Length: 107
Image (cartoon, rainbow, N blue to C red):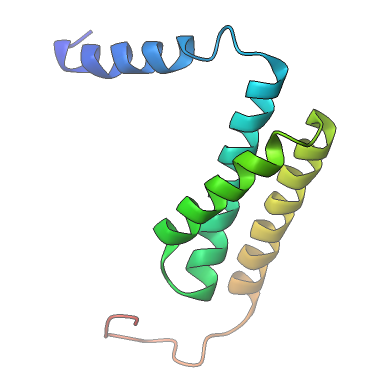
């Protein structure tokens, strides 16, 4: 193994070991924050073109809501987000764009 991969492996190990002794409430809060960040990034990209702003707001909202929901409810929310993303991808793949050959940058 090359030595340039060692810092990345060490960071990954530290990140994964930090979640080892979490209570169920802490795990739900973390899951809610992650789901909220992903959902916020998706909504931020679709609505305003700023996924980072949506991710920050979504993570804060998701962490608060995730602490109050059960694990099954969080899984349902994640499944709904996956279905929304799949629907958007299907829409983008099937609808013909107005300008097929665009040479400029999208704004």
